[in-house]
Image (tube, rainbow, N blue to C red; front, side, top):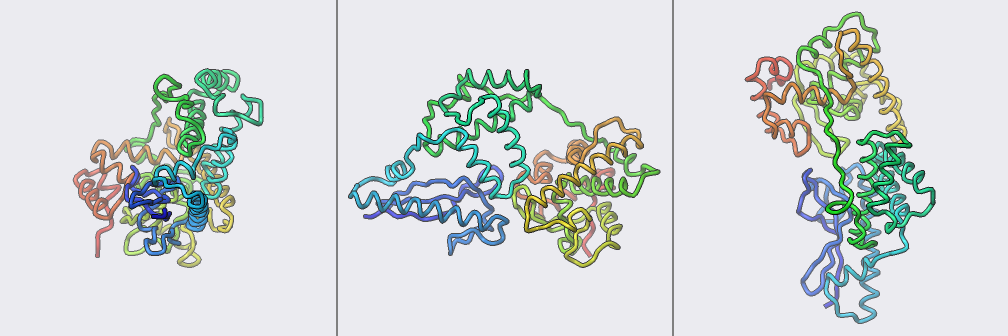
Amino acid sequence: MSASAKIVLRKKPNSKGLFPLAIRITKNRRSTFKHIGHYIDIEDWDENSLRVKKSHPNADSLNNLLSSKLSEVDKGLMNLQSENNDVSAKQIKRNIYKPISSLTFFDYIKEHLEALEADKKLNRLTTDKALTTYIRDFHKSKELRFQEIDLRFLNRFKTYLMGQRKLTETSALNIMVLIRLIFNRAISDKVISKDLYPFGKGGFKIKFPDTHKVGLNKNEILTLESVQNISPVERHSLNVWLYSFYFAGMRVSDVLLTRWTMIYDNRLHYRMGKNGKVVSLKIPIKALAILKSYQKEKIDEDDFVFPEMKKADFTDPKDIYRKIKTATSKFNKHLKSLTKKAGINKKVTMHIARHSFGNIAGDSIHPLMLQKLYRHSDLKTTNYEEWAKIASSHPWLNTYFLLVPKK
């Protein structure tokens, strides 16, 4: 019986509830799978056409990648069949994906950065490009073989980062995480042997020091809400921060990309930029007040609630990224002056809205419910309704987060 290959979505979700794309190789009714390295929501998969639906933000890139990988496997199968090799599905997989020893560590870094750009993960792309610079500066060569990166190399590299480059331990370990990621991919692709893996038991251990990002407490939130003598730009920055806070620490990129078309039936409906999940949330009372204050600036229903993205070029992901980054920097600058006027001696940034909500809600809401509010897993309407009941039993939380009742 001849072997066959097919694109599939495996029904084994990861910790985020997303499903892996893979190529299934079948021979004599036995199958093996080659994972592509990308995960999507099951609602974004077309089982009939075996393609990623247009509902996924990176559908075209993923479908092109799948076609390329399938062609790769089909070509390998034809070569094996022409040799009349009677091999199993697993042997076929090993033969098709045989090690490519000529690939270096920097070759894999290049592929990693190209994949991030193709997936429009520009924040991660900028970060990992910067981390790669440290590796190149330390090695002082355009080529770096995986065999060279052993325990001694990593220990020397960490000493260099914290000594000569004056990085914190956390920053140094973030670079080690990138190196580990590249090793895991090379091993998965069978480009290098597991024996070369320099991490884990007997190797370099990545253990981050304990950190604590201090959020605001409920009295500080009340103080910040009522701060007086602030400029229009400070008021706008505070509105954006509070809007994020009222929605349980909504990410700043999702806040700025909120359009009026996403708001109907007393709910906010949007797709999260980080993981592509679609959520539908009832609008907290205080968030509703902020929305009303921006209605006079609305041009049409498709307009943005907040002005920062009105002139963004949505055909250019880099322009979107730059405008979000610039806006975030501006907000953080104004938040610094706002907290000073409010007499709050804590560093407050856009991201601290998330920690502030966690501080306040953590004592009253079960950790699993809080996890769902943070969108670390699926957030269904019923869960949000359940959270409303919990909030309503706590007077202070009820004041802030009581949902708009149904008509």
